[in-house]
Length: 381
Image 1 (cartoon, rainbow, N blue to C red):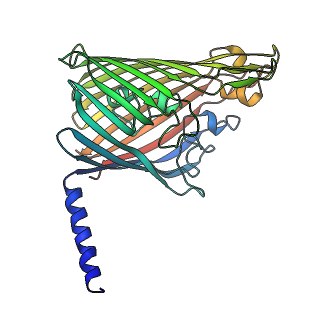
Image 2 (image 1 turned 180 degrees about the vertical axis):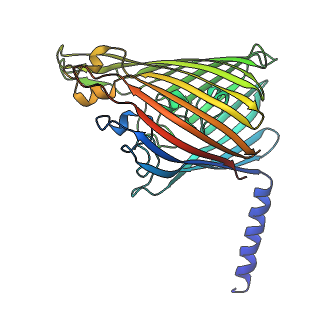
Image 3 (image 1 turned 135 degrees about the vertical axis):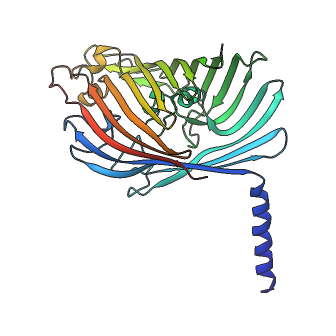
């Protein structure tokens, strides 16, 4: 028996290797060294997009490691399994990181889905943990996830992944008009469902030319009712998100994109003065672009405006708590970088992050946050 165990183990390893060899592994990493040039002590780390930490804080960090396995099971079925790891510790806010207890690097399942290709003419069905339709197209057009998430991802408007089922494909045979429908738990990246409520996604992509594209997005997030503490009745807390993206690119030359969104959440604003609840509207837009000076060197720039509450009472510390009011301050976010492709799979990107904030009502103006970074991106598989 002892002699047969190594043989069995060897056979298992060989058979597993043969199975995995049928598919394809891929992976990439990006991280940086950063230095906080300025930081206002009166702005909380949960309210900023820039790296956490005080003025002169500096650190090395791995912001993402991807390890992916893709396999075509047959002509009709394909699958993807992807792991992600990133470093949180002191370099990110709790909302931005996936650090384990003690700040160690966390690893979690990013994608785990089965795709039924051409389930009917021009359309694929997907089941499992998968990308949501919100900004998959705009993120690809932005092209510099190594520098920053797209605005809806960055601000937590819509999760990048959800567990559910989707149907996506062509509306017209030439691919000029495409669709993407999804039903998901609404619980976020690989998180288990804890209630009966779901999120309903819809997305239409228009591509009049190979260089020009636009997307229209809509989702409805069903949520449990909340208690109106003044009327003692339950009221809706569901949210509707709409978004628009427009992008144009000349490959190996330049690209430009504009993305905007509006999210309305029922009864999310509690006014302690008027003793009432009202809907909260959140808005944001992003303009980005890059220009290749030479094929290996590109200038990258982006400007975001994010307004967590379009209603001024959401920013009034008298009507709401001071913490809520500060969290609802609008802010502008600028990214400027120089991307140097030292190899087809390696990029070095020195960049500057600059973020400004709305002055609190009845309070003192908040100094801008400025961070200098040297970002490294490379594909290792």
